Image 1 (spheres, rainbow, N blue to C red):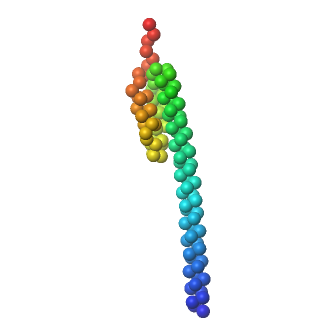
Image 2 (cartoon, rainbow, N blue to C red):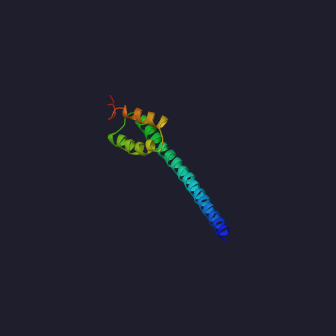
Image 3 (cartoon, rainbow, N blue to C red):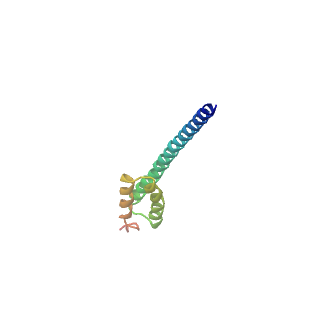
Length: 101
């Protein structure tokens, strides 16, 4: 009789562990998809600010602060590459518009 109880308990534990593993895997994939989406939105905003600054010909202090604020989580989510390059380019722009003569 003990063999029967041991078999049932082992099966229950195995099923519980398998269920928990499946739930964790599902949640991990769901979180990763959310992170990828957030990273894409941050990249889009960085790209947009870069385009605005390039069009103006300068980057205001507010533009640079906003980029720094957006870039920190973008980088933490694994974003580098073009986002990093765009932030660098904006920071190299003049801070005030050129005088028109």
